Image (cartoon, rainbow, N blue to C red; front, side):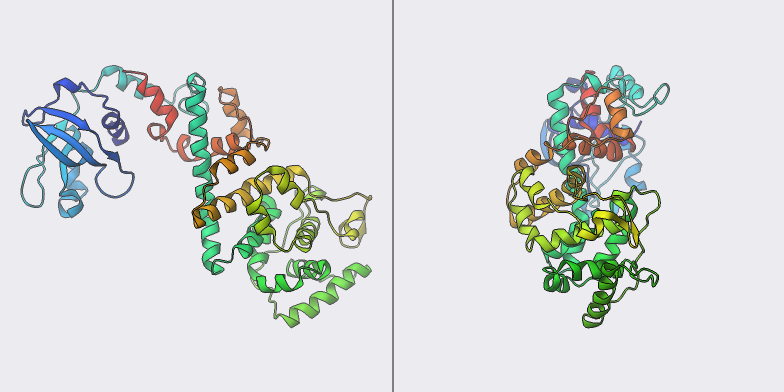
Length: 427
């Protein structure tokens, strides 16, 4: 027996309700189970229970054993003085409030339907399960229920991505443009160079970016200089030498320091993702638009965002991937696939956070945009497809990643709409 099952049983009244009595043989009638509390304090707030003919309003606490009340030292916490009923699997000790009054106890051991316990055991039985607990049954869940759950999970994922936004806002004194600059540069580095690009963004004073962003060569010079790409004395390309000269001038003028910067990597990257190419594309983006943040916040459609990010590298990179080494000529524009990653991981989390900040409702707008983006392709998404939970777009795939990481891998099946629905079907 686990406490999360007791919570589920109480929350959904999975009890032989007409027969309930306390350990003192007083009748119990549940009027309102209350509000499930996932934080510190009693497990259910504002419950209403008729005990022995007397209506009580207050909180309900659940434990495996009554003695857990003392193991958790609730008798010392004033927050538990308002508990009107102690719901337990096994009653092995009388429990008292701080004023000495005894709290009525409801022992559930004899009241739980056997089929519910069997269904619960089956859900968590690891035998013959290769992926997740409900892999044999998730495909049977009504599509309306599952899609509603995915939408909620998607916004939960946006909330979790908000933590970085809030940290950066605090560091920048609520400069939203600076926050976007930092997050965009980080995600231009993708998985391998994200940390490196993030360290570069943190070193740059954004007031300097505002002063030089009209000059793409100067912006590139600072990015390449901080990345450590302008230190090779054997390269004699005129473009390289220009960058080197500009960086020397600007770093002296604005007192730019290179400390604590992680140098970008080329290893394991395809040439279009080389840091040299990505930094030039990033500089082009900021040279082309003076107010990217407001343009993204005002955008209500994916096509508007694509227009903002319709940028390429500077001319030098048309026939280079690295400094000093000529390659086959090719335009190096941002692809829609890459822009989609930026939308999912940077732009929509920022739009979501800013809307909350100003008290604006943009949930439908965000759903409209993310639903037009293709789903991610990875092992987790493929495994869910195999068991009957197919992602149709980026909203679904982001939600499924949230489901897998925050519920499936942590066995939080009874807090999940899928697990809850499967058990509720076993009355």
